[in-house]
Length: 349
Image 1 (cartoon, one colour):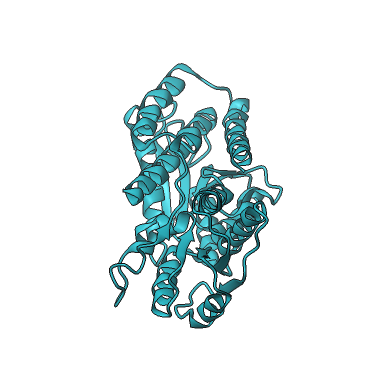
Image 2: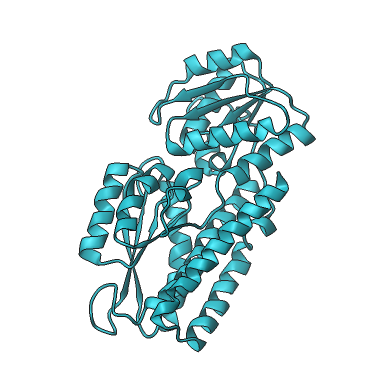
């Protein structure tokens, strides 16, 4: 089932990020930073994301992968005898709360790095503060501008949204032979980025969306936007917003008489997007297309990734004593990973 594959893929990505993060910590773990001057003090790292609200499922998936890798490493003695302590704070996907949370982690927990956040808007809100304090930031956010702000301290652990949208549009155009598209998206950084990726991907085939409709992140009634879309007679309606809104839009589109193809990127691959809504018929989303990105082009499977963490991390950390200056090694690894993913996306386009 696709949703099961999506969960495994997301879980594996966060666990793989934690592996690379552990390599980073192994380099600075003996410096006394992160929680105190004692050589046995825990290494303090942060996590910020939604554990409540409509985006809570993203936070739960993210922390599960991260905690898997950290628990495995701590069970083997930590890093240079120091345990890794994960400080988790819920921001409910609210940028103001994210800023408050990161200030707390910096001033009270004295973190050396932070996994933050699963949402693009909140990631952008706290990026300047982490960069100013020279704290490494890892994010699974999908917006393309997350790593375009000139910071040397932010790294992706997930491909940008273009990897999903380009794959989806290519499938719909080349294999399903659709010719007319409309886009509906929210006004967040994530939503605007996804709509831009969708438009760019369509233009590679000489196509342009018939209309691009926007809505507020907390909107629940999309009648006006859908009326405009239906009047344009697209064969495909592309979602660019969150999973909850996309699910509601699918329901309302069917109710208003749109019988074309419903499609979207990573967000609609979550259970939140496809779970039954009140009064939503069983077949309301029966024509919902979600891109399938070959696992070999993103990461290993959950099982392979877990084995990779348990075996490789232990070998690296037990046999290698990296000097303090070597902390740039894992950062360069992440940079190369990001470049490799960009190259793969370019090849697919």
